[in-house]
Picture 1 (cartoon, one colour):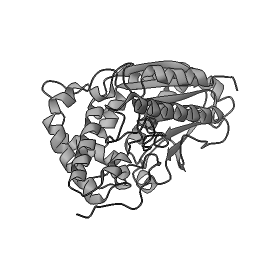
Picture 2 (cartoon, helix red, strand yellow; picture 1 turned 120 degrees about the horizontal axis):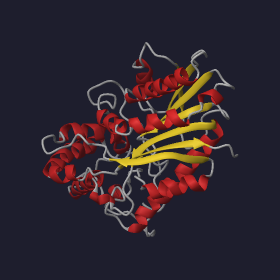
Picture 3 (cartoon, one colour; picture 1 turned 30 degrees about the vertical axis):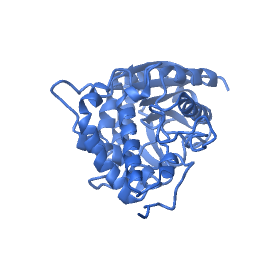
Picture 4 (cartoon, helix red, strand yellow; picture 1 turned 90 degrees about the horizontal axis):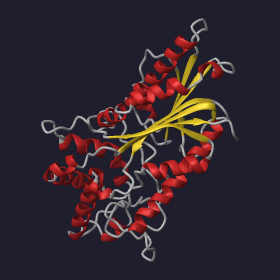
Length: 371
């Protein structure tokens, strides 16, 4: 039987943008879970910004507060996040600078060049309290002029690696990830390869932001996490990635794709435990950790409230389908996601119990005066 192959395989590429547009399968209409998760830490993040952002000092050299959302996708979550931060800053200005005019605000929306910026700006709130601009490019490199930003925000973006870790597709490497698409349930050498790539990426991210953020400026990061020492296969996403690999291998047995194609596909995503994150920040030396914390991103799950697996898979598909489409034919991708819903429904109890505390982390960093 002939195999269904997509000729434009990007073996070493990093993540592909989320599904664009405003259709029923778009990320715009399937990103509610991410919004709920990010809001879990909202109060603590607001408190840290209010306490640590010295608006009097910042406004002594500029009458405009500039914010950036790095990894903004296509909306609508980014609009809520940016407006929330602006509201926190406005309240602090009203409290500490009651006789001074309110500063103007400018928001930069950043994502990869292939991101659907058309949808982003078509759906931007028409009545808003900020000037808006799009900035295409990887946030693992420079995006803005020196000392031009006051607040940087990034939610559910920094777990994406800039590229697939080295060695995963090399048969002679101890990190060869045969039969899997992620480090979940893989050998320690595979997990270590992911960890090294993630640490390098975060270091590059911080080095770039150190040039772009003014001293005293703030970075807010909300991201996937995992408790130090826990196996990723114990988490819901780890179970899901293992199910995806199992489905693809089953399709390979039918001759529609080859096992080599499965071996050559690895998702470039890594949930770092807090210890690894803190280590990178401390080695960077440009930023101090103001506050950090871990939480359960799905506190709404109870004995009486359960995950709708159809909606869950729709969310996953909206975020990840592009990466699968770069490597497998559309027919294969369609079958994989259809079967994924069935498989996850069969293990729904295990999936829901795997949504544990401390699998989401938030970090608020402040640019110090050195460098």
